[in-house]
Amino acid sequence: MGKKNSPIAVIIAFLPGFLVAMNLEFEPLTPKCSFIGHKNLINPILYVKLLAKKFYPSRQRLTVPVPPGSKERPVVLNYKKSLKDYFDEKQNKLTVVFKDLGPQVSYSTLFFFEYLGPLILYPIFYYFPMYKFFGYGEDRVIHPVQTYAVYYWCFHYLKRIMETFFVHRFSHATSPLSNVFRNCAYYWLFGSYIAYYVNHPLYTPVGDLQMKIGFGFGLVCQLSNLYCHIILKNLRNPDGSGGYQIPHGFLFNIVTCANYTTEIYQWLGFNIATQTVAGYVFLIVATSIMTNWALTKHRRLKKLFDGNEGRPKYPRRWVILPPFQ
Image 1: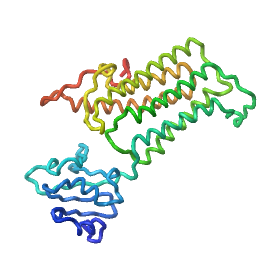
Image 2: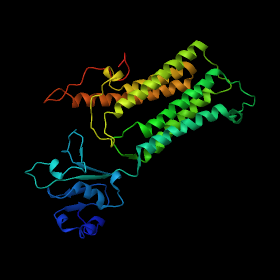
Image 3: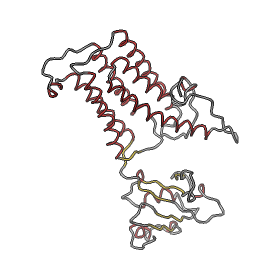
Image 4: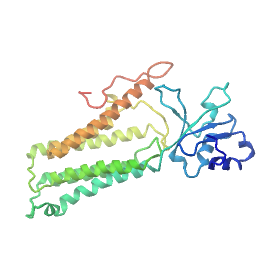
């Protein structure tokens, strides 16, 4: 560490006078560095982020290291704060761990592309003679449930895209670029998988009453999901800040993650109406993923709002799937 020929060391040689008090040791071959900063340094956290242009600020994470063997999560430094907010006044040194998060994209970009795929792919199976490429040469009969299903599907993903740009407020500005490929693979493949079977020439429709119940229930859940997202939006400031808060109102009065609840139940409605193995496989996978997220969030909120030292106590609620969990 502390090689004098490192790019960082060269930059430090040209620092303005008030910044010479900073000593930065850098190990070029690893994504970690040790930063020893003067507590009166002007905005040192932001300055460290600007030192290496290759690692632009959104792909950097600066944390206060935890003791070896500790199960606590490292504290991520906020560039809007001073170094003295992160260490005891009696200390004159602070070690900061730098991690390169890799190429980043905005969350709105990530969500847009993962939702765009299903929105385009599903109608292709409905409107175009795709099944001729799979050995089905005859014209297929389009059942009413298949028509309602494509409308339901497109409404869902159009809603998601609109929420991405006009409703959601993200606490984190960016996401790793690799998540774009992972999430797109998940949504695009499942979208094609479901569309193939719901629009298949040999598809057998459910009864008219079952179709109406499924789509009716699902549509109510979609609109409820939108309202849940609006409630969550109002918990944050326009810049995404605001920290963790206890959501109140509507279904949040009884369920911690009402947004996930309505998301799961709207797909249940879709599957009641269309009834395919592909649709239920997607429902099971999505439910398991969102349940894991919900349990993590529920535990975090209960830990943060424990009723001690003036903090409010988190109320007793279902986690995600009343009356089961």
